[in-house]
Amino acid sequence: MSHFHSLHSLSLSLSHKMEQIQHKHVQVKGLKLHVAEIGAGSTKVVLFLHGFPEIWYSWRHQMIAAAHAGYRALAIDFRGHGLSDPPLEPEKASFLDLVDDVIGVLDSLGISKAILIGKDSGAFITFLVAVLHPERVSTVVTLGIPFMLPGPSVLKAHQLLPKGLYITRWQEPGRAEADFGRLDVKTVIKNIYTLFSSSDIPIASDDKEIMDLVDPSTPLPPWFSHEDLAAYADLYKNSGFRTSLQVPYRCMYKDCGINNPKITVPSLLIMGEKDYCIKFPGIEDFIRSEKVKEFMPDLEIDYIPEGSHFVQEQFPEQVNQLIFSFLGKHGAN
Image (cartoon, rainbow, N blue to C red; front, side, top):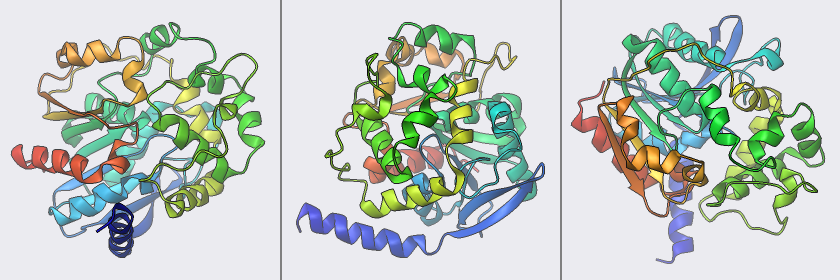
């Protein structure tokens, strides 16, 4: 079977299984948050936490695999993302508000403890929940981001990079809005996926904006279909980018007020070695030297050599194998 036909049959199989995913809204602090769910019969709960420009849909492959492995899989749209209500004042939203989203969803659904799986900025939320509410977390898995919390230490690393760094640009009030506003939502998502799929950190020269870094003729990655892009675009058309620019980018350096953080539950870090995040100052040494284990002593680290920033969509079978063999080994529930 050709690679195209195998991808096509995989896509048909996935779309059939995705029809089994249920959707609901739960109330959290006056906001209706969207929750996608599959495998509702199980008491073993996995909660997936997205980054940007991702959404619940980013976890489609893992949700289906989780249900198949006997877990109840949940993926939320954080406030101001996708099908969830925006906060009343998006410009005041913080990482701790998204921690409230996680705890509020667990409370609303009567879940006392869950396995948390987070990626990108969703990894920050995963770490924060595990530090602030350890009694609610049985196991931690993150993709692409080793242990770190928002705050001044993140700023120090970013200051070592040129001022055209995409994070720095998007922190400037109005700049990303003007940059994104030149394009339709689908093109913005396509451009960010293209940039973040590269192994290079997105940095613009003084005479360019971040969206200018992408050649419009660049095709989608082979693992990201036009149907996938349309699904993302529809969700972000609904929410816009106002909250997702605030969290993570515009509140990333705000101190969380947490001293001596530690996560002691069994944990797994999956790193794509072609993920541009590994090139941020100090990150690779922090992981490979295992300094990260000072904060997460029961941590396992797995590398996917060709894995990009979107490793869970790029290599879903490999990521699923790593996640669910790890959870099985630790009897996670």
